[in-house]
Image (tube, rainbow, N blue to C red; front, side, top):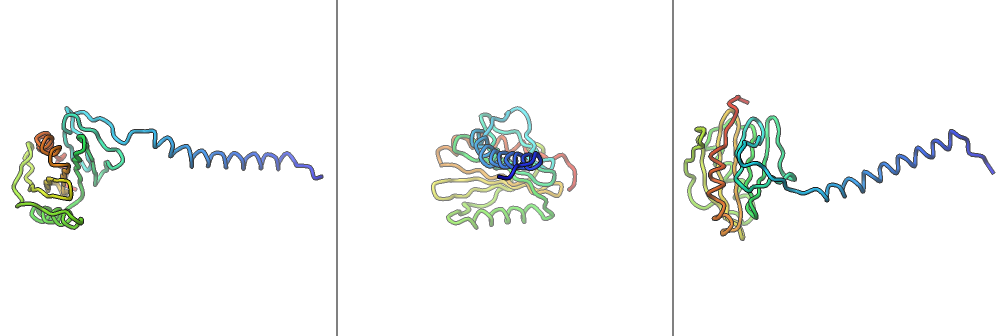
Length: 188
């Protein structure tokens, strides 16, 4: 019978260690991820940085969906939830005008099967003076609102959707929150 040298034994133990570590990562991390909540509360009295220097004050009672929210230096997305209502603010670089940004957002909405824009786009202005366009849309079992702003080389898109009853109940809070959208004023 062949003897195992100390060096071979250490190699075997090292290999078992690597396999155990990989197994821990493969099974342990997903288990930890599933145990963490998908949402977390956010303060309604302080601005939330969406990305690219754009902030918004979330509505009272909102939670942040951390599975979708992605802040960044030149882009960003924040998804807030108020019960079943979804309130998303997305920021990306943009070099066009407000009318083009509004048409682009309307096109993306209607490109989704079953979604249709309802009514014309109307002017909207934030408390900080950002001019934008807003409108509504419908989808199977849901209604929605949208707004778009262009400032500092960015487009800021706000989309809201929920069941008719829940949306009607939360829309005043969401509209008040949307009026708090502002940029840090730096051109991108």
